[in-house]
Image 1 (spheres, chains in turn green, red):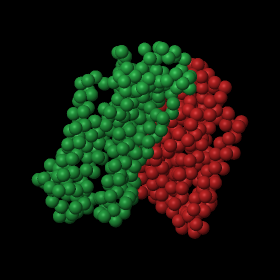
Image 2 (cartoon, rainbow over the protein chains, first blue to last red):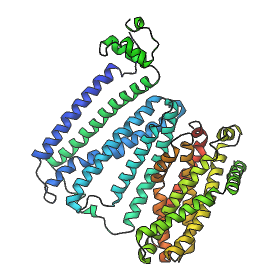
Image 3 (cartoon, rainbow over the protein chains, first blue to last red):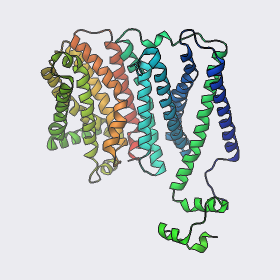
Length: 271
Length: 223
C-alpha cells in the first residue's frame, strides 16, 4: 500500500547515512589526532586537547544552529515561503543546538577549572552563551504547548524572531557589563595560542566533523518531527496499517482493539 | 493609530483605576521583594546600598511580569480579545496602547520602589537625570517586550509559568543597563560608561516597539 508518509526521499535517506558515516569517521579521526598524534602545548600542556573540540561545538551551537533556526523562522513567517518544512527545520535546529550549547558550556567549564581555577567565570562569552541557552530552552518550552501544527509553527516562529533580535543586544550588554566594569578578562591569557602543523589540522578537522554531526542530527530530527506531525494528525491508524503491511508491527488482536476503542472490524484490519 | 493607542491605553488604565490590582497587589509585591533582599543581604547598610541599583531593577523586572500578566488576563475573559480584534482598532495602536498602559503602571511602581530603595537601603541619589532617563527608557523596553510576549502567550493555559521563562532572559539587557546607569547615578556625576548603556536601551526600545507595531496583528492569530 502506498501512502503519503512523510519519509524523506531515498536520495535524502542515502545522503543522511553518508553524512552520518562521515561525521563518525571525522569525529574518530579528531579524537585520535587530538589525543595521541598531536603534541601537548607549551603553555597549556594536555589541556590544549580540549581546544580541538570546544570551538567546533561552540561554532555549531552559537552560529550554525541558532542562525539556521532564525532564518527558518523568518522564512516561515514570510507568506510566500510559508511551509511547515521551515518550522520543523527550525525546531530541529534549536533542539540539536541546545545539545551543542550544553556541550559548549560543559567543555568550557572543564577547560576553565584548571586554567582559571573556577568552573564558571562571569566572562562576556560565557554569560551570553548561557543566556542564549535559556532563550533556546524557552523556545522549546513554547513548542511543547499542544496546538495545531500551523498555530504552533507561527507562535514558535514569532518566539524565535523575538529571541533572535535580542541576541546582539544581549551580546553587547554582557560585553560592556564585563569590560567596562573591570579590567582585562581572564580569557585573554590563553585565547590566542599560536597553532600550527598537526594542531591546526586537528582543529580544522574537529570543525568539519562536528558540523557534519550537526547536519546528520538535523536531518534525523527533522524526519522524526515530520513523522510525529504525521501521527499527530489523526492518521495513526494508517501509519499502523503501513507498518503491519511491512510485517514490522504485529496485527492487533480484537481484544486490543476493543480496549483502544477502535471501531474497525477485525476483518478489515487483517486485510 | 495614535487615537487607537489612547483608546486602548485609556481602557486598560480605567480598568486598573477601578480594580486597583496593580496598586494593591503588584506594588506591595515589589516592596516585599525589597524587604526580602534586605533579609538576604543582612542588616548592614553597606552591602544594601551597594546592591541597591541591581535589587531595584530585579524587583522591577519581577513586578513587571505580574503587571504584564494582569494586562493579558483582563482580556482573557468574556471574549474580550476577540472583541478587540473585531473592533477594527489598528493592531499597531492596540500594541502601543497596551504598552503605554503597562509602562504607566510600571512608572508608578518604580517611584514606589525607588523611594523604598532610598528609605530602606539608605541609597543616596546624586545624579537625578540618569535615574529618570534609565527608568524611562528601561520601562518602555520592558513594557514593549512584555506586551509582545504577553500576546504570544495570551491563549495558553500555562501562561503563568511560561511568560516569565520567555520574558526574563530577553529583558536581561534592560537589567544590566538600568543597573549600571543607577550605579553611576548613585556614585554621582556622568560616568564614562553612561553613554553605551543609553544607546543600548534606545536600541532595545526601538527594536521591540518596531517589532510590536509590525507583528502584533499576525500574533493575535496564534492565540
